[in-house]
Length: 286
Picture 1 (cartoon, helix red, strand yellow):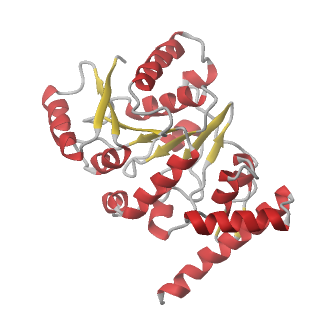
Picture 2 (cartoon, rainbow, N blue to C red):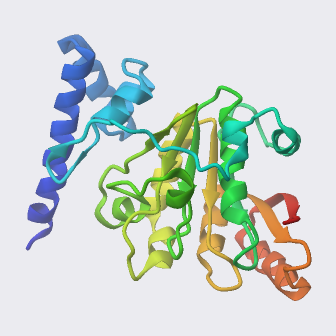
Picture 3 (cartoon, one colour):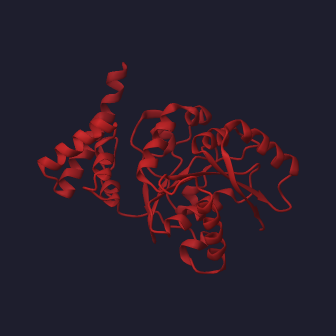
């Protein structure tokens, strides 16, 4: 099968998605022309260009994402698990601790005019990294700004369990095929979107090191104020280092009385090669 033939289904899916968005939002021919011109000028897909121009909402885009030639309507949002206390009790003691962490990170961001992209890394498994990434993303979204949580742990994805969804097109599917990733709206957290890890593939590190991932992150930076990445443990895999390099900012997570000092020190040594800035460290007590 040649390259042109293999891409035909993706092009067809994009065309169906665009047509569905035009119908859903009653876009005029003038609006369509503006969106098309903006997309061509900025290298954006139709939906992304329409969103950038303010002619459609994120909810509209989420409702018409296409996969395998089928138009999917969002009938159920991702639902935060009870373990994500911040989504259910934002003003409790745990919420206060996350607001303090959020404030510290905001004070250290390079520019309020740029998207804040943070990769959450830990040396070992079982240190609470995935839950912290999820609750940090919820804390950012509670500021009322568009926030994206990306499950970049392509080895043992946890976000789909924390939010009760796995998604028809996750990160691996988008990176492997070029398909538009499906972003889940989150129940009770209207400014948060979730990108699940997607299908299990044998080459996650290569996917995360590919320029396609870098391009996706640049697109997200234009659409979101805050982007949080979950990653696999650094002592077992190098995937997190690839994500850290592109994100540029790292929040290090360790678990009290669990994380070996030598592992934590080794992670910091390896992170220095990525030139990412370590903006903070969290010690989990559980």
